[in-house]
Length: 546
Image 1 (cartoon, helix red, strand yellow):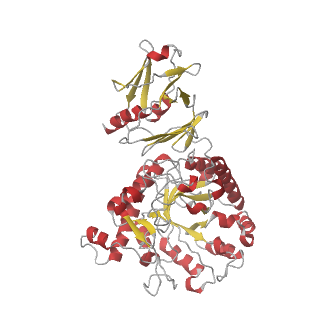
Image 2 (spheres, rainbow, N blue to C red):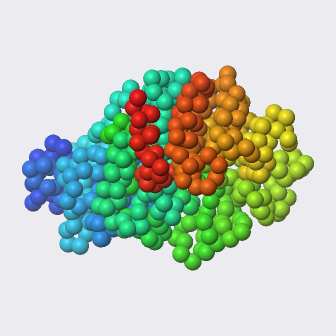
Image 3 (cartoon, helix red, strand yellow):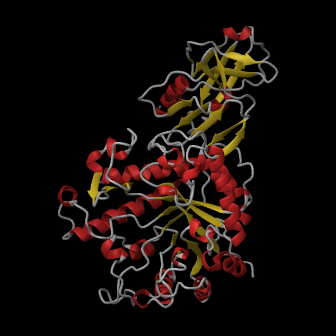
């Protein structure tokens, strides 16, 4: 019943299909009637049929604030955008294709503007929603029927240039998950926050330049031997894709909530897969805003909608992990991407609780602990544990082939604090400062891979690279959790011990070879590799192509 109600409401917003087999012309089209499950759908502008292609066009229609779909028309780009929790459709006037859930799908007719109204093809959206469409010639009637025995399906159109699984990686390979067993994952983080890696500040609000930049980025990385990108799709409780739950990221246009004229995520996935590379969607789950200013935030940003969920910690805004409803909202927002797009993985970084321990959540602890935990530290770790467990279950329940992984701080605990910890003297640890109980995640199998950020050299005494890799390899041994290592080429050329030559990275990669548990490497970040400090591009290319 809920599906029928949603479809009815949706069709009041977006009435849209090419009516195949209709032997009528534009003159008789004025008498066309449209029915959904026996009830007539009224429109203030009569449908019409485009001759030769026999496509029925209808107005974009009535917009309601209370519907489960977000429909908009961007005048500058001439693009109609439709978003629900499971479907994203974008159609641009003059273009013979649409983006549906990250896939390019051909259109028989494009969006048109007639007498100041936006007209769209009826059959296209209807069939994507799983409706049966029947044309009654004798009565000039279109009958739309919902398939009540099953939910509206995901688009069946295959991505136009996605390579077969043996190129982008056999997702069912027990040894290597999203990478084929014959090759390791070679990844790079691509930051969108502050326009660090993509898009550049020079390309803000310029979709053509943004597309060119991303294509060049992929070409540069692939030339080094990289086969996977981890792109930050949620930098600050926002999105670089059309969402019905969170606003557009300001790093696309300079203004949060402003439509950039295209679906960047759909474009990036298509271009990445076209090159046989993997695309992992990287989320910052709990960062609401990198500063405490809220005046420039979009009306539907979480800090505006749920200010009671927000914690100001040293002038940075966080979504409070201690509030169950807030955690579930973030899971829903991540699942929006999982359901809509053909991503290879969901990736989280180490933004759980701030590492300096300054996080005023006494009231939340009082309201949501119920005496279960003796200390706030235990309670905080349980908050994150619940989040990780529930998110993993949600992802694998709908797309078991999608890899779920996390990139925690490189030191779990020091041996001086816990005898099972690593032989390090780190001032910050994942367990005690970020409240990331990584060992539990691994042992319980809540994640598919772990990617610790081991951002120190082989000669850095307080936290030596080799000691940490050995420790992490032992943690995942005899489990189904893969180990990728996070590397720090951004340190090349700095004064910290060990970073005076690009050979440091190569030596780290060679050291990893002795551990079968290490099945890949990820570098932070794209811009730091592309700057080619100390000749790292040539060094990596030589190592990976040997």
